[in-house]
Length: 84
Image (cartoon, rainbow, N blue to C red; front, side):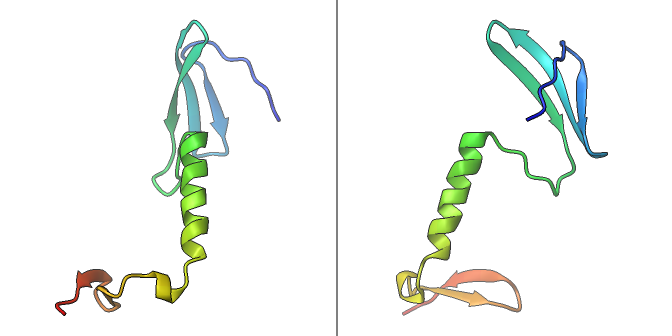
């Protein structure tokens, strides 16, 4: 792990596209501003872990676990409720 010291309004670069700026420091809290391209997802670690768990659980679903009332139209990419 790389550990860097930064003061307020100083920035760290990750690659050529990601900037992390120290916006504010109050007591033991640091506010960071993150500039990244839209294709790079930025999440707090606890949110990232929750998304990862949900994706892993969804990947384990068998076709029988998915409700029959959904129908995917591959040509339009939408999901519609079937009228049964």
